[in-house]
Image 1 (cartoon, helix red, strand yellow):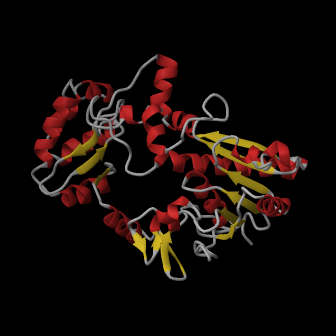
Image 2: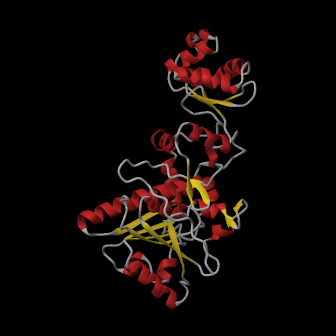
Image 3: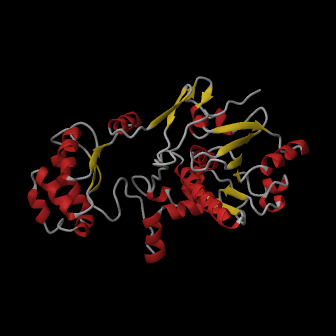
Length: 361
């Protein structure tokens, strides 16, 4: 038995944030019925390359464990089909522009079901931000993430994946599961609302709290950390390596391995606060030593001593690392090798029942 076996989700979502949420819930056992525009389907079906055969890998990434139905919501017949689907659903998920589902008579209030869990995801909320377009890149820019990412103040950089969408999808899962738990206890459903902007502000954790509590407005620091040192990328004899030294004990061990034990008692570097204040000098000294050997040497030498470090892997080497650690990072469904769900449950493990649906003619 799966954790969410028996839960039916009417999935009116597309692109990334909400489809990621419904896929995770599907992995946990929910029955997910994906509603798509006739003849076109989810926009990500055309987002390629890369492709697997004639299918966009973007779409395949977030739509397993779902069936698909094509419904034209602009017609009364289509809206009636949608209401029939919702009538047997426990959860509705949608991420249209705010007001769209109301126009179709399919919003939470219009449906009038007291036991329904209804999740709406938008870019900037359903109030004054309703008309703003909620693309991940835009939210990274206006939400502050790009202001702390990149080498300098005039070189903002986005993350290499639509991280805000993924974070929003995960928060949506938490909200939906909480609402289902409440319904189990009381019989009452509720409206679950999320927007990309406030999810990002929450997910910036220490950077956001530094502003709300101390008025600090962080700036980009490249690969450095505002509060920890050494905590960045360093050169070696062959490829970059990351050091993530979180305490004085680890720093002393690092200095010993690099054959510079005197750094551990140098007044500039004795405590973490000292090291953060003098990070430029620390970087120069450590870089000179790290350049003398390949990254793998340092990884194999420092790791057993409890000094967090590792080479900067590409995604192929990252998967190879996970496989070498027996973490099973992939799952095969029919002809597809997909990224595995990282949640491991001892009694109700995730299941991979359905490949992402093709858009049938």
